[in-house]
Image (cartoon, rainbow, N blue to C red; front, side, top):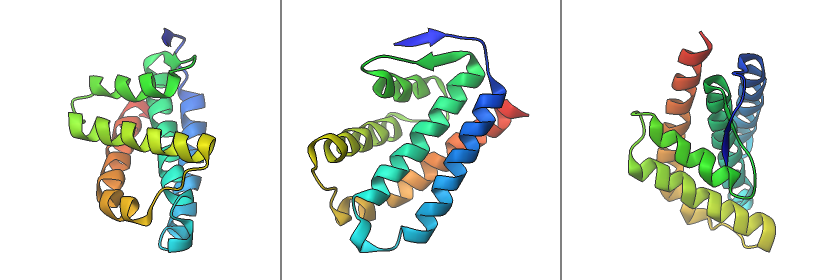
Length: 134
């Protein structure tokens, strides 16, 4: 459920710092095939954190059982994203949940096929957030 809260730019900045740290971590391990599940999980975390920071600046937060799904769907509000990009994030969320909660690995080919779009999504999220934090 998406609920109205007081906009919190300071918390959004802190979350952005965490997302940036994860991104640096990904640069270190991202090319190693041994981490084919850990890398996409961390891409998901970066994207989720950036989405969270964005909605915090709008004065919202996601809570409850379907919080992450609704958080991602909230990004449809931004014209920068098309349906394919939102569905890509949702697919990554589902894969991440299966790996985290069911122990199902994410195959290396998934990351090879999706890397460019994930990087593009992260770039768009950061631009939106930078604009909102100015």
